Length: 107
Image (tube, helix red, strand yellow):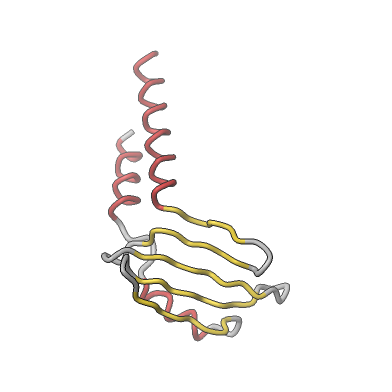
């Protein structure tokens, strides 16, 4: 239970990846570019790369004003997929903690 609470805290308050860490991707041979955009809610980083099967994919990282990753979305120009959503992941972890607490109490 204690590890779950620490995980929830790290998920809600921690940095999963920092925008500055994405700069290094621009040097990788399969990356076309890494662009940074400042917006009202925070920073957006768009990375364009080629997968092993030569599929071109955009990865959009959305950060808050404290540089915490809020969402990560991939787009292969056919499908978009949410790879990470801080709010949804926090809810999943909270529900898991609640359910494990209920199971412990009911035993």
